[in-house]
Amino acid sequence: MKLNVLLVIMVLFFYEASSQQSTNTLLNNLNETIHASAKYDLDKIKRIEKLKETLHLRQDPFESYLKLYEEYSIFNYDSAYNYAKKMEDVAVQQNNPSRIAYSKIKLSFILLSSGMFKEVFDAVNKISLNDLDSVQRAEYYTMMARCYYDLADYDKDRVYAPSYNQQGHDYVDSSLLLFPDTSFSYIYYSGLKNVRSRNYEKALLYFEKLIHNSSLTYHQVALAASTACGLMAR
Image 1: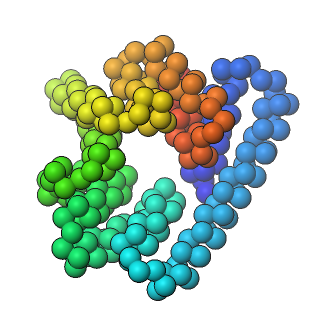
Image 2: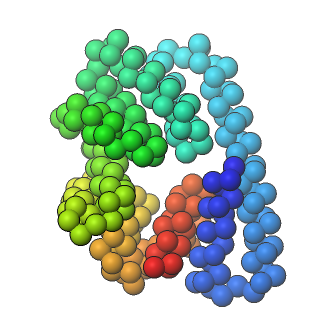
């Protein structure tokens, strides 16, 4: 909940900076969006409960665990990790290399979100890209880009950080070859790469395009706004 409220504030900060809203309008939007955040969490909990109730009725447990993982992945890391492990266990039982590789990407995302870099590399080193389809490869590339960007931020030195940033750029470039150029992911990661390359004016153009797209999900708006706010604070 605290994370959601923080992202709400970031969203509204960006709107204020980009469109110069009045204080009253901003406060009204803040109240409305905080209420929407609470509803978003409540809706998510309901979806999770429904998925769990029908879990035993589903023929493919891997897909069921994947849906639960996706609900938990930005909500509760411990639960997301547990369901990623369940995905992996099922994939191994099914002797399905593609699903085994994909479950390791999901595990890696949670490990990375928890700052466990060594464990991330242990997991991804066992992934064969040949076992992934184009959508899964794009997800792998963006996860690895984030990993190296986070490493650069962790080190903050002149020896390793520049190399980590460049490796992050390379992974973003690989992902952009797989995303449609009008998709959220293509625009977001193009903007992120420009942020990391210190091309701030160009980066802001990408994030402004996203922020004013009314078709984005709550999470997409929050992700774009939080990154844009970090950009504006530089």
